[in-house]
Image 1 (cartoon, rainbow, N blue to C red):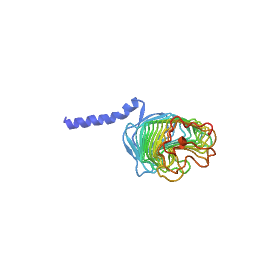
Image 2: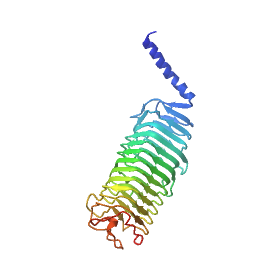
Image 3: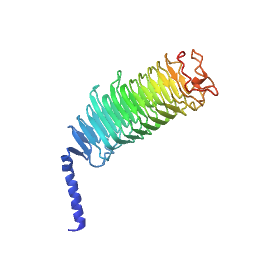
Length: 371
């Protein structure tokens, strides 16, 4: 028997034995489109699948308790989400690349609270027409170690649909988003957004919910150790009517609006140890009540040099009462030659907004009698 014939026999045996081997592992192979999953179980992709031109999903999930290993392969389509799931719980998707489609992953429920435990790990989402990853109405979710690149709208969209928080107990960590519309959580509670990097964000949301990281109508969250660089059309981190959250150790550089914006009735938040620099407007803007803003660095903001903007801005139009500011540094910020908003009813001090030469602001801008 020739060596070439022997080699083809070995290859044929390997291909023929692939399905039994996978079956013996308890995993069902996925190798074509559209694959509709109607039964619980463990599934594994065994080849690249390209459904371009079909307008079809590659995978449709209609059962709970499903684990999909993309196995390092690429799934691609257009005119529909690459992976679509609706009304399911206990879903895991990991280890592969999803390209184009209306969304990379689209998981939704028509019944609030129905979806539980959705885990997305080590997935690359590239060139989605709309959101890269969209999760709607669920609890106990995690998105980890994913790359989302070049999407038409938000890279990640997590929505509880309101009017009460219906996205709860979630973790979004160690992800990279580049060339997307940002990361948005709306109507959420107890969501951690930590250790993510967002680059070249082009905000597409309608005002006022504009930012690379948006925590909107959401409470009890942790936004920590994220890096946001170069934002067009919005702020670096935006909280809209968000209460009782902690913003810690984030870095924002070069945002078209504010570095960090506590907008509307964003009350009872702790803003600690953040850096906001080279933003076109305020470094940190506070509109709510009873917020504590401590040990932040807000330098070289208001880069446009026009309009009313400051390193640290207590917005007089919206601001409530009893905000506390301590040990912040605000230097080299441009804008109008005024110390603080003229509408404030209290005499400002030079160190608060750093609008006078030589103003110091380390451990000396705590003004409880004013705010």
